[in-house]
Image (cartoon, rainbow, N blue to C red; front, top):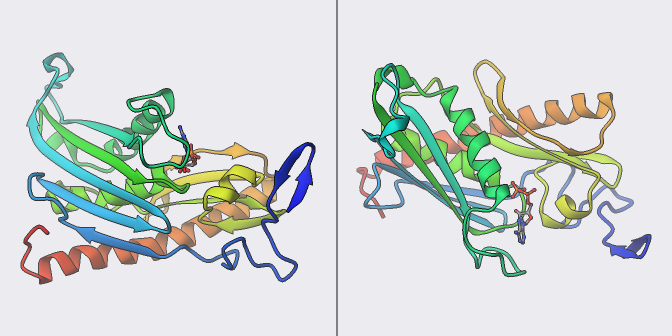
Amino acid sequence: MGSVGAKEVPVLLSPEGLRIDGRHLEELRSIRIVAGALHGADGSAFVEWGANKVMAAVYGPREVHPRHLQQNNKAIVQCRYNMAAFSVDERKRPGLDRRSQEISKVISEAFESVIFAEEFPRTSIDIYIEVLQANAGTRCAGVVAASVALADAGIPMVDLLPAVAVGKVGGAIALDLKKEEDNYGEADLPMALVPQSGRLVLLQMEGHMTREELAKALDLGVTGCRAIYEKMKQALRDRYASGGGAA
Ligand code: ADP
């Protein structure tokens, strides 16, 4: 443990360049994606990503609630991201706090930009993301789960949306931050992109990076997203190769 001011902080990068969990700077945590994990939803997916566990369910296109939100020329895309009260070590107050509202909004906007919403006027496409266990990067795990769930529901989209957070830890740019790196690192930059075009549809940043570091982080994030994209496609292939039944 080193110390910064009065606060004890863990050593995030060893002299050999290894991270707190032994990963290299450009290494992802392990990821497992199960498409079609729920019976009741039109589409669903479960993602285990490092110590994150995230479930996504998609309903729609269906009738809009509340009705005044209905749009005559396209479907509306509504996402609700929620962290279970038991998902973090410190007990979290249940319900929609400002952080959850912000994440729900940025994820809704990301999917609005890839779903062919004009094919389903006057309807709603509802995405529910439930974080059951959180260890940083849950908004990205939520995007990945929701994206596979949307594909599972047969919603037409430009493409799947892989997502990952890159950041700066111990002075170095690192892929896919875990909790200690998110808490004590210098920067955290979640992103989601359309793999074919490279268009970013979600990009946020907390902390500080130089212009050069930002460019490096974006490159690393794109590489990470492309690796995650392959796992998302494989999860959908597995789902339909196994006959398409929900678990
Ligand atoms: P993300 O999960 O997308 O990285 P944040 O950067 O806001 O989003 O959060 C980082 C991590 O901090 C979360 O994944 C979770 O482990 C933890 N965390 C977030 N909100 C709370 C909270 N209200 N109580 C306890 N831990 C939290």
